[in-house]
Length: 149
Image (cartoon, rainbow, N blue to C red; front, top):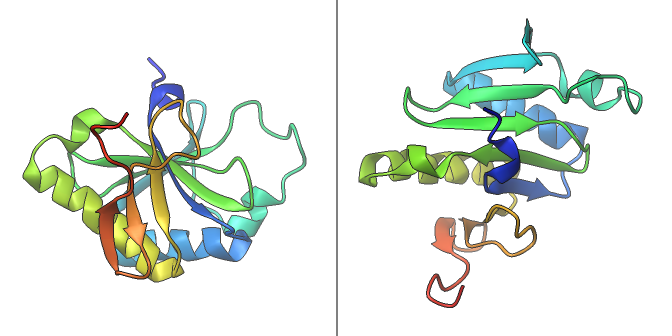
């Protein structure tokens, strides 16, 4: 079952191929387990510019990079655009204080590394973040009142 379309999006806007490469470098440096695939085919992790410079329609399916911060917490990066780093998470994997702490640490690491905000939009509500890394406070913060939604 492909849940990617119904998961919340986490993004780093105004990121270039260099931003994507910085994210890939962070993932490698931290030693997070990663697996890149296109459909069912497992591929090596390339340099960002080689993935982002592909011609439109070059892939039947959008390549994805699955990154496991821990055995229980997964982020799925999709290279659909070269102007923002985008990944999704399954909220069911973030149940409990420990797992949520791992995810918050992941957002903080990415935000600090790229020196950019890292907002998370609810599924189907792009552009209305509820949680994210704030560069000014150097913290993961609530960006919307959960009672208002």
